[in-house]
Image (tube, rainbow over all chains, first blue to last red; front, side, top):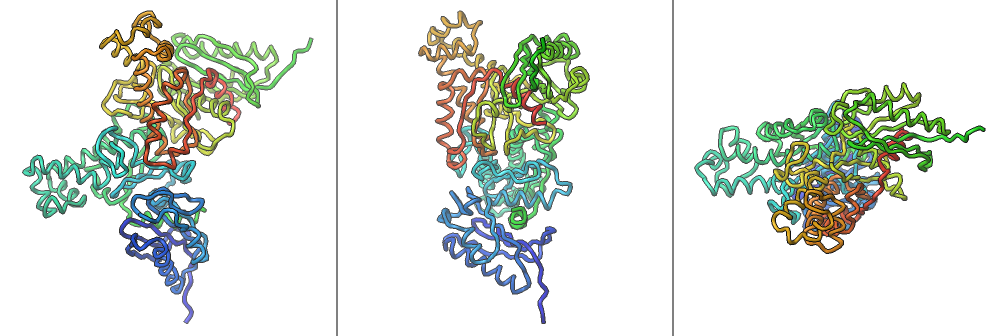
Length: 319
Length: 319
């Protein structure tokens, strides 16, 4: 029997631990999905071989690739299609991803920063009216970002734009994974959030009894436990979210002053904390003297776990 | 005898004290110039009457206006051609500048923020190779800014983009004229610079003997005195510039991380401090871990007193 074929873009979102893949139609519909371990230590050639294997299996199932997009964590040279620098995908810098994937898959490949891909995915999937100017921020272990200006991704002079996570919200403050001090990521990245929670638990564990019950101990603490415990009334969990929201608010305040966006889109797992995070942000932004810009910018949280791979696929469509 | 006519755009740059006007040819050449008191307290209708009088005199001298651009200090609604909010041009908000000037001058009028106009003027006049992405910052009593992205002025969702002076470089720090704390302007605006100098003089005036000689007393201190005294080896003047440069560097660091520009262009009178200001900025930016973006961005100082009115004229050309 003849199989039914369909045209779609392939999106590949590479994280330090897992890689997500999706086949996305021109209309933005996800037709096929796959999650596989990234196995960073096995090297980039092995990675290209494994994701290509998935695409080849999809082709047997009827996929006719229109192009592919690859989102990588790090400083990406989009033109050459490789990583210039990456703290999370050690040893993958300098590998010719674009060339290797194009040769193997016989389709056009676009390589971009993973946060750019996720923000583009969030822009296309979450914002129905397509505002012109959107600042996107991705919350995870690290904090990334991307800018949609005039309805298009703004990549900057070297493709490095959108490093929102390393703007300083408390110059000289907490240590960040990048080596700097006071970066937004050092507070709003999951390691920064957990660092604060553990510090508060050490100071007065009795305030965090509910939190410790939920997590099963301070050493097992995850951001999801903090969301649950905050909802259950735990004072430490609530304090952590308010403090995190305040630091995010300072970062967003700077972005709104500079870019005057229609929408600020917060993406990623931490956005599950919902109102706990959004309340201090909205309070801070409402208190700004520059009324026009701040009353225009809507802050929206989206918890779309596929934004990265859908966005990577749709960036291939844009190219 | 017949007068020789010439075509040009009229640029009008309104400051709290003085207004500068220029007739600028399509090629960017300044044909006529004028400086007049703004007389803010006389109201916007009187202002429109006086600048129109200048243009009418220029027309008698041969000017054939191709359009006019007006740069106003404050939050400008470009579409309506009026000020929404202005701390420095009290009572001028809500006045229909675009309509009033178009009716009187019978030419198309563009109204924009004065810093946008100055940055556009600096972009066109100072940067020969026309880089695509430029962040411009204007240093004066206040600190303004403008963004040229993809070779065009980025105005944002409500025309309020580029408020670089109110991004926070020391959250919770020094009081700013906007009412906030820790804004870049509170350190790098001339009032912030003088506040620091006076504080250091109060603490130990003997370190600022040369500075006090040059200024003729702490109460007469101006930024120009600080430049002169720094060159003459005055320790307080040098400390003030280094400290100001450090705060500017934090603001620029954030902008480079977010926008990844080709050039950062610093405009305005304070830029006379030249190397005293530039050295701590370059040292700070060179120490950043995000090599690609920071090695790409060149920091350039330009001391073009006509950038505002030339830029306003050239914005009329763009429209």
